[in-house]
Length: 67
Image (cartoon, rainbow, N blue to C red; front, side, top):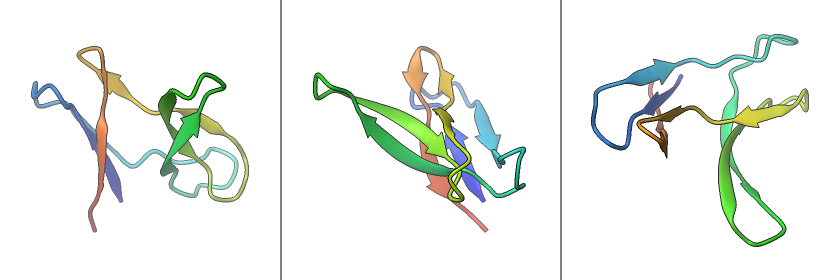
């Protein structure tokens, strides 16, 4: 299961974002914008869509996989 943790160190974390259409866990990914900058996203591996990854303390949260 993917856990997103605060990169600033406040201790906040989120575990297990799932797609509401198929119940599959969202996967971390990166979206490259037209200007070359990147945005952290989470996407459904079954093609149902993508969302902006969680943020905390004004920063993208870091993702890690656990069991």
